[in-house]
Image 1 (cartoon, rainbow, N blue to C red):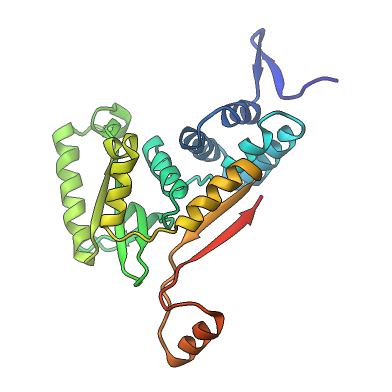
Image 2: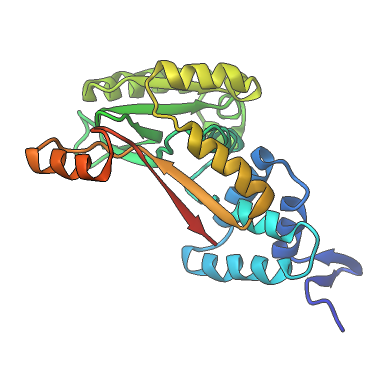
Length: 251
């Protein structure tokens, strides 16, 4: 039976993009795998992504590592724009930290109609927000990212942008590549900024990776209002105010 995931291009046998992504995901670490999954989603138009995910599921049938590949893809998000952003998010997931909103918009204070997009926006248990910006090095030397600007100009623009974002009154946490390659350093930083964490969620992620890698666990902080009615509801449910929630999404 002909394998349609293998094609001939200029006389060379190659695998299709879904098959190539699938083969990479079933062999990669979660950190590298999530970066591959995020990037592969960005290569498809939004209306094509469901079909792409479906093709990966079809490829996983009776293939070694198939469930692992599908599981990693379950966490993929096309809004992640770089390896560093994806790798940081993978570490956040693995340690049970509350997931941030990606590419969150903020109106530019002095330029009506213009918007800044921040890499990550975290929510603390009390409802306050923390902006997360992932610092890659490529934007300082890659001509396509410099867009005709000098490195000095890029740095100046970045400082100007950050100064305007501080007007929203939110702490701004910078995440470096050094943080990502030294995970314990990164975890200490997340805790210092008050990002909620659930050890139970982290343990569940580890268990799912072994027993049901086709399932994805997402953990988010959900600040609760405090009316008397809610207090009674929480007491009946055996919960405390400000408790954070976790949810499991099965692929």
